[in-house]
Image 1 (cartoon, rainbow, N blue to C red):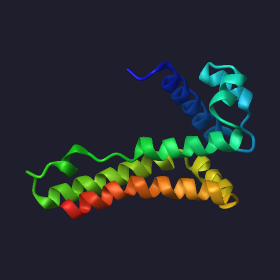
Image 2: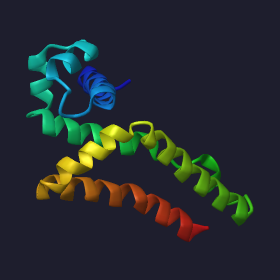
Image 3: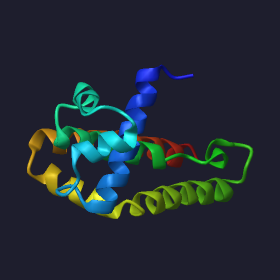
Length: 140
């Protein structure tokens, strides 16, 4: 079982994802995010320096949560075509889940484009995530 602080952080990220997806990043209020997460506003700021940092963490966790390899990709007893199909299905499922939060993703990229540090962080995370797909593709 994850530590309580990890669970609290996940609740905050989930609430931020929902609020930003519903209202947009600019209209999202930290008070509303804290309320939905069941934490105080001060607790939000204990985890995240501000709204931009929370947005970045939310988007990064969204990508990490939804991009998952299906078990068939790693099963080397399967025909390579079946493994490739599982890899394609994994990618499609991840993109579909991310598209569900399209407003959040779009607005995050707008923020990222104005911040070299945030851009590097997001691109580094995406490279890391997709390197798993590259490795799987090469193993097939």
